[in-house]
Image (tube, rainbow, N blue to C red; front, side, top):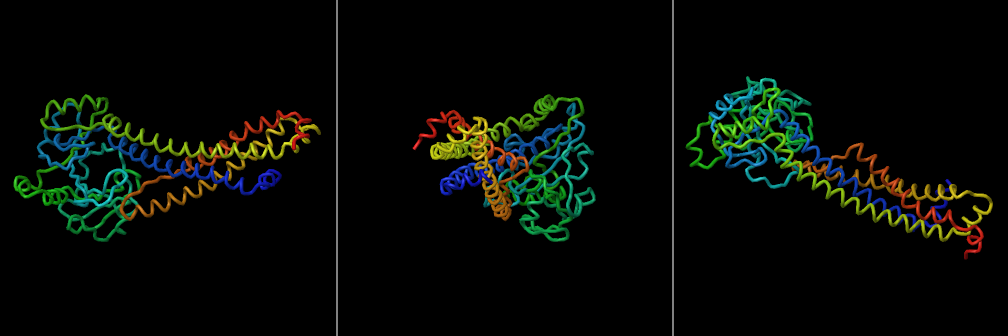
Length: 391
């Protein structure tokens, strides 16, 4: 309590100093949560591309996604490429023809794939909070499995009807949150996805395609012991006009860019923290100047330099701790409000983890202690006689 009373001598100054730390920790929590979300998306993508490669049309491929249709004959060609054990064609398209919002990661998508085509090799396992996943028997029926964000955005449950591109589908399953792309997808049987894709294309393109002969991407599963990069080179050499995306390609194209973005976000927060640290130094320096005679008395009656440093550093650490807790609370509030507002459009920007919260409070406390150490060390070195004469 003695430390609290000392800080309470100059309530306004202490409050302003705590505010400086609070702003820095608030920035760290908010930007750190945004960086966590980006990192989760990248890690989810890396997990998806593990031990397989995605084949798309070379003219429209971008980051493993393409809306340009290919012939299903490419699937048969891939089966003859050395090192590939299974192929799973799929259809992917935007849920909205003209998306009105920008999402953090993949926009809302409709996907279609024949259940079981991966032959049990898919390692990116999806679980369900309600209902079930698609089965091979669902081909020819209008059923859908929704990602967690899509289900929340449209307030859908198992048994409800979901309208996709003007066609009604019965919802048979809701996926567990993955914090990655599946949260933003609506899965339908392959043939239904093919029909939706064909209907969305211009007439001159649609007239030259058959419903069941189109795919937009093909997952090619690599045999154990084979290098996906080598298999990708074989695919490009043996099949014309295709592009491949491996795990290494994803990390190079997406991972490097997000690392830079994360560094920028954390850097902004660090700048705010430095400003907060400077305010702590200023407050402690002023406090020591006002308490010079008190410090001199403590030294004259036998108070050690270590005790003086400990007391003053503890006071500055309390400033950092209080500022850290308030900053964490405000940051948590921003994250909750931001995510709830974003869910309406399917955009979740923040992911606040326990690690981020603990780091923020600990960093604020350590920052306060370090910022108060230099003024405290100066105070401990004061000559007791000179301190007693200080006016």
